[in-house]
Length: 354
Image (tube, rainbow, N blue to C red; front, side, top):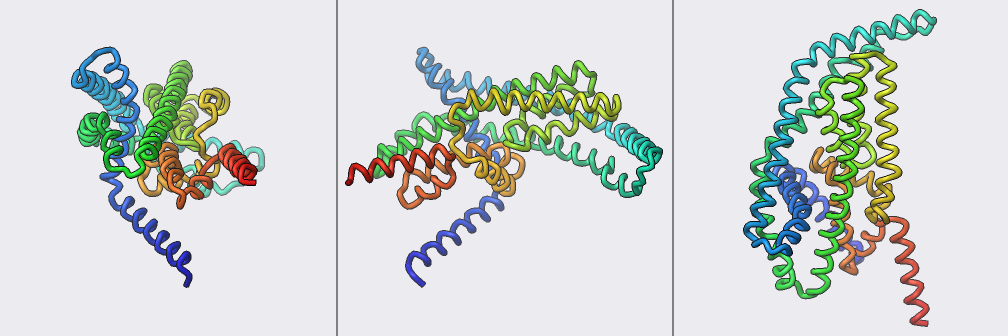
């Protein structure tokens, strides 16, 4: 076996060990990652407050008060809505069974023969409601880790101001290491800021739509749309299922269709038109990589991994691009624009060499 093949096998084995370790330690890694990304989002505000002449300790205290206030507001809103929704689940189950029976009778009246047992198994109300409830309980479970996340966040915020100096002190390539750190923080911060604004717009419009229709728990579904909008490709689809189902249970198929069309319109306008325009050159990742990263990080870290799949892959891509031995992986992860830019650079270097 050649040396290059042996090194490749060693690298693959190391990758498998690291992934297995991350999956085993997901319960600890998830709060830490959330604290890291909350810290990255807070850094611009910290810098702004310090530029205004506010002392560092006071600036940190202001940021912590804002973070704690927002977190507790989310806990209160989600917790109360979850409790009310859970109490209503039995009623929704019975109503959904009735709708399925009416649909079977309607199809049978037009001569369309369908096995009712199979139809009830496909649209099993208990299974559907269990899926909805487990999704919401998972969201509520995230809130239960608030103390651990907050504790990590406090230490990370205090550490963030001196971290660049530590990187410069321990790095042999000081400029390259700092450039990589700055690129990661700026890229992730920009993505999270834009995504937060578009998600906030999505959640607000969803709330107004459902409130106008009279669908139960519009605040809960607006919050769900806001949070799941961070999940690329499928997040908005998942967020649409519970309110469309409730519209069907409460008002029947016509209103459910209106709700579904409303979600489709909102996500098309914001997700496909406004967000790409605001995002500019995008996240620097190909569409396939975005989807695969969603599956990969979701498998390792669960729902939070899906929420943070894009910024995690962005950070990994930037870090890999700093080393010649791993630059090829960064190129594979990049978008078509990145590959075109790299090809033009190679052509330019070749012409200069010639």
